[in-house]
Every structure is written in structure tokens, then in C-alpha cells.
Amino acid sequence: MKILVCVTSVPDTITKITLTDNNTKLNKAGVQFITGPYDDYALSRAVELKEQLGGTVTVLNVGEADAEPVIRKCLAIGADDAIRVNAEPTDAYFVAEQIAAIAKENNYDLILMGRESIDYNGGQVHGIVGEMLGIPSISPVMKLAIEGTTAKITREIEGGHEDLEAGLPLVLGCQEPIAEWKIPNMRGIMTARTKKLTVVEPSGNDTLTQISSYELPPARGACKMIPASEAETLIKLLRTEAKVI
Amino acid sequence: MSVLIFAELEEGAIKKSSLEAIYYGSKVAEQTGTTATALVLGEGSADELAKAGRFGAAKVLHASETRLNEGNALAYASAVAEAVHQEGATIIVLAKSSLADSMAARLAGKLKAGLAANVIELPDLSSGFRVKRSIFTGKAFAITELTAEKKILTIKKNTITPEETDAVAPVEAFKPALNDSDFTVKVTNVEKATGDVLLPEADLVVSAGRGLKGPENWGIVENLAKALHAATACSKPVSDLDWRPHHEHVGQTGIKISPNLYIACGISGAIQHLAGVNSSKVIVVINKDSEAPFFKSADYGIVGDVFDVLPRLTKAVKEL
Ligand SMILES: Cc1cc2nc3c(=O)[nH]c(=O)nc-3n(C[C@@H](O)[C@H](O)[C@H](O)COP(=O)(O)OP(=O)(O)OC[C@H]3O[C@@H](n4cnc5c(N)ncnc54)[C@H](O)[C@@H]3O)c2cc1C
Ligand SMILES: Cc1cc2nc3c(=O)[nH]c(=O)nc-3n(C[C@H](O)[C@H](O)[C@H](O)COP(=O)(O)OP(=O)(O)OC[C@H]3O[C@@H](n4cnc5c(N)ncnc54)[C@H](O)[C@@H]3O)c2cc1C
Image (cartoon, rainbow over all chains, first blue to last red; front, side):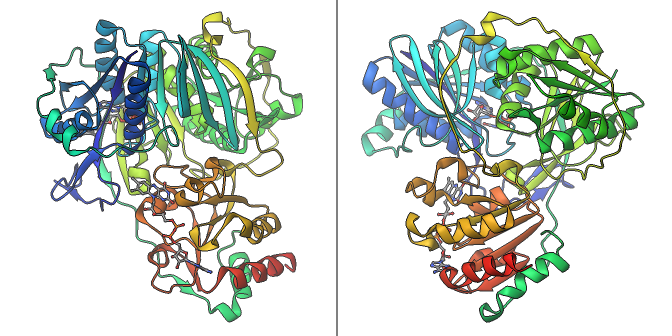
């Protein structure tokens, strides 16, 4: 089993977003970067499948050099090697093109991604890559088992889930509870230092979207407190004041 | 140049979020001096198709194919791409959904289109084609320019308030080529709650967290939801503990919702939880701890015990 896991380097989920340069950039000062939580699920499942079936797990990031600590952590968790496409990846189509180019050279059985990046929330890179490679893409995947050359998958749908069967190769966007997040152990951290991280230059330059500026949401007004003894008033206020029921 | 809207069917009816997308698409057509066509895939009644016209479509394309009754992202993307070419559409609008998201991504790959997800306003055409989209799960917005000839916009719920008219749009039969290669993924089983309000579509949501103590106590949450015709949701630990099904989990790593009303019961208001619900119009927090962080992000708050407050709220709703 040859597995490619695509990971993003994203601000920690507890980050308070602030802007800089006249609201044209996110302020990275003091921000802790982590592997996308969904990508972490993908990686954890990939490592489990490798332990179960043998094979290799390669981690791929399209991004700048400052993402390397995040990539090293993926190696510490159990990936065998890593590739970084050296570019500022501002557009999903561009990212997909880079991933597809690498996938075409390497014939992976499975390409695992997160269901979406937690920074730009596009939820699209897996679909675009699937299209570029001419293979199915499925997201969001909650369960994944491999039997021979068939993948048995549970996908979340609105109000429930569906079970699917598909032949390999496949591109999957993963979410919980596909695996438990793995924490690197000391041995993993030591061996990660010597694992191969190849840096390649991007191919093609199709950027189809461009961010011109950022905005922050307006603050909510003060919270109107209702004493518990008069809880019923809430329902009246929701009807007459907020007009939502 | 025209605007094509993908209108999604749910059990034969056009989804409410898709009616919003049709209305949004008709406004984009007005802005760009062109017309809006709605595309419906799968069997749907004449009554349902007529709704598309009433919400702003100038024309409805309908592919009444049994093979398209099942929402299949790959086959749908092929059919939509064919409609895009047939109609000369350059702007494609859809409402965010589990199916539409997967479909839109394939479509972006096929058409080499720029895709903006989670769009929350009409585009700004004053310089190029710019949209405002929600990023960082609602913690920020990015003004994004779409520079490719073809543009795909997936809109978030409550982006625009649709208006229904009595306009009548002609319905044209559409016969997309169906490729067997789009049907290689086999669906072996579907489990879906029926009769309930679907969470991503719901205008009103009652949500509960670890403060409920255990799954056996969910009756008080469900009763309030039922009285309000609301959907139910929960925090991540609640679905992790299997107290509630995973498709009810909202937040940064769960479903992102933007209903008119979100009532949070016994949820502390962690930043990852807020990320999934902070674009709700009105937020109510019920928590016994007056220091719970959620109160800082709420419009109405009650410091109280859910086991006391929820049944009384349910009674008050029934007495409205
Ligand atoms: C100005 C700017 C600078 C950026 N710099 C970096 C950077 O240095 N490093 C970085 O990692 N991201 C960076 N990003 C984020 C960028 O890579 C986004 O992830 C990308 O635009 C796709 O966004 P999306 O929300 O559409 O992805 P989605 O479609 O939501 O992503 C789905 C999945 O695709 C995979 N994926 C997405 N993006 C990448 C990627 N870049 N590499 C590998 N797999 C990926 C992941 O598995 C992800 O879970 C930057 C973004 C901007 C705007
Ligand atoms: C990477 C990452 C992603 C995450 N993603 C998500 C996500 O998507 N969604 C999510 O929800 N969480 C997410 N979390 C978890 C999040 O950090 C919190 O742990 C979680 O939201 C807490 O859930 P809770 O509010 O139900 O429980 P608690 O934090 O335990 O809060 C329970 C609340 O109930 C109140 N309470 C107790 N008894 C009563 C009573 N009788 N009446 C009234 N109030 C009562 C308490 O005062 C307390 O405020 C994520 C965490 C990480 C690290």
C-alpha cells in the first residue's frame, strides 16, 4: 500500500485572528502553526493502514519553508518521508495542480487529505485532484478499511451516513472518527530528524483566485441576561424583539 | 455569459438552501446583465420545478434521470459541466451542502474554474469580480478576486433573504451524457434520520453539551427542539462519547451552521465550538456557570440549570 497524505500548515485552532499591512495580511506574529486537524486524522489512519498492510506513507505539503516543523511532526508520527513543494500556496487550484503532478509520478494507491483546511475552509483540493487524476474522490470520510484492492468507506451525509465501496486508487477527504489523533513519541521524534524531506519547485502557475484583503467580523452586542426565575421571558423576547421564532 | 444555479433535490423537493441560491443567482444575473438558469438533476415534480421560477430563475433545465436520483458528486459534476457548456454559463452558483461541496470541487477541476466557498454577500463588480467569503470558520473574511473566466460560488446559508414572486419559468428537458466511469463508487447502505429537520438547513437549532450529563437526558433538549421545529446539535465531546450521532457535532471540526437562532445548553463555549456557530444570527446561552465563556458571544443569556430551564422554555413555546 503506497499512501500519500497531504497536509496543511495552519494556525492553531485557539488562535485569535488579527490583521496587518492595512488588512491585506494575516498577522503571523505569535501564532502557533499546527497540522490541519482533519489532515491529522488522515495521517493517523494512513499510519494505521501501513502498520496493518505494510507499505509506505509519504507526506506532502505545498508551502513555504516555515511549514517544515509541521512536516517533521508528521514524520515523527510515522510517515516515512516527505515532500515540500516550495511555493506560497494561495489558491486551491494551484495546490491541486502541484499534488496531482507528484501523484502522477508516483502511482499512490491512496491519497488522503483532510475534509477541509481549517484556515480557508475550501473543502475542494481533494475533488480537484481527483478530477485531474481521473479517479474518484470521496469526502467527508468517517471510516476507511482496505480489503484487497477495494476500499470500504463510510461517508457522512446530512442527517446520517452512507457506506460505500470503491476500487483503488482513490482520493479521500478525511474527518473523525476515522482514527484517533496520534501524538509523536520520543523515538518517533528522534527518527524523524533523519527521514528524507525532499524540497521540489512548483510546476505550473495556475492561480485562479486572489485575496485582496481581509476583514474581521463585527463584535456582537452585549449579552442580555435573563434571570433563571423568569426564563419564560426569553421566548417572548425571541418572538417580539429578536423576531426569530 | 449567463448564471447557472445548481438546485439540489432532497427527497424530490428543492432544498431551501437551494432556493436561496437560485435567488442569489438571479441577483448576480441582474448585476451582470444576463439571465439565471436553474439546473435540477433527478426526478422532481412540476410543482417543485415551478418553485425555481418563483425564486428568480428565468429558465429551468431538468434532467429527469433515475440514475441521477441518488446524489452522486462525480455524475453531477459531469452533468453540470455539460449544462455550463450548453448554456455558455460563466458563473455557477450553489448552496453549500455535503453533496454540493464535493460536486463543486470536481466541477472546478473540469472547468478550470476559480471556486470561492462560503460566500456571504453578493459579488462586488466595481473592480474585477470580488466576493466576500467566510474563512477561519467564521473568525475572519477574505475579499477574494476570481480571475479565471469561469467562476463557482458556493454560498453559505442566510447569505441573502430570498423573495418569492409569482413568476413562471419555462422548464426544458436536459439530457446529459451519463458516463459509467462516474458510477464506479457503489453505495451499499444509507442511514439517514427521516422526518427530522436537517441540521445544515435548519433556521432554528437547539444544541447541548457535556452539561447534560448523559445521553439519557436528551429528552429535554429534543422536546424544546420539537416545540420550536428546530434541529438538534451537540458539542464535540458529546459526539465523541457517542451520546449523540456524529452528524450533530458542530464546531471547527464538525458541521458549520448559520441559523437564525442557536440555543446552546450546557456548552462552555470553547473557541473551537464557537467557530462552527458564530455566524448564527441570534445566540442564546443557558449555562449554570455565570463565568462560562460562551456568554461573551451570546445575545441572550440565562445563568441557570438546564434541567430546570429547558422544560420551562418548552412549555412557554407551546403556550405562544
Ligand atoms: C497568502 C497565503 C499563504 C499561505 N501559505 C501557506 C503555507 O506556507 N503553507 C501551507 O500549508 N498553507 C499555506 N496557505 C494555505 C493554502 O495552502 C490553502 O490550504 C490552500 O489555498 C487551499 O485552501 P482550501 O481551503 O481551499 O483547501 P481545502 O480544499 O479545504 O483543503 C482540503 C485538504 O487539501 C489538502 N491541502 C490543502 N492545501 C494544501 C497544501 N498547501 N499542501 C498540501 N495539502 C493541502 C489538505 O489535506 C486539506 O485538508 C496559504 C494561504 C494563503 C492565502
Ligand atoms: C483541534 C480541536 C478541535 C475541536 N473541535 C471542536 C468542535 O468542532 N466542536 C466542539 O464543540 N468542540 C471542539 N473541540 C473541543 C473544545 O475545545 C471543547 O473541549 C468542547 O467544545 C467542550 O464541550 P462542552 O462545552 O460540551 O463541554 P464542557 O467544556 O465540559 O462544558 C460543559 C458546560 O456545561 C455547563 N453545565 C454543567 N452542568 C450544567 C447544568 N446542569 N445546567 C447548565 N449548564 C451546565 C458547565 O458550566 C460547562 O460550561 C475541539 C478541540 C480541539 C483541540
